[in-house]
Length: 61
Image (cartoon, rainbow, N blue to C red):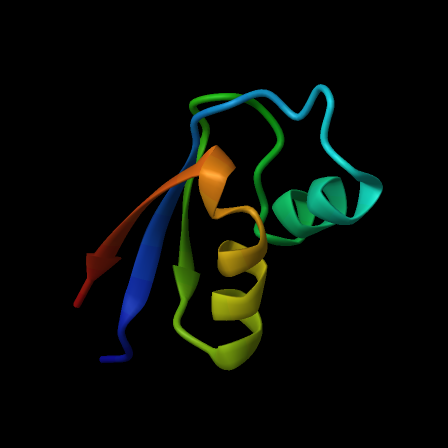
């Protein structure tokens, strides 16, 4: 089974740039405290890295 990340949006998108809002939307997050599971890929790692200050990330197996 491929490794994946459990990603939770912890802070509001108010005051963020459009690029950061787009990254959060691409991860599948819409509301604060919403949690999604994303597969581990270079693209997803890049999206997470760009908005890591807004997220809580846990690694799943």
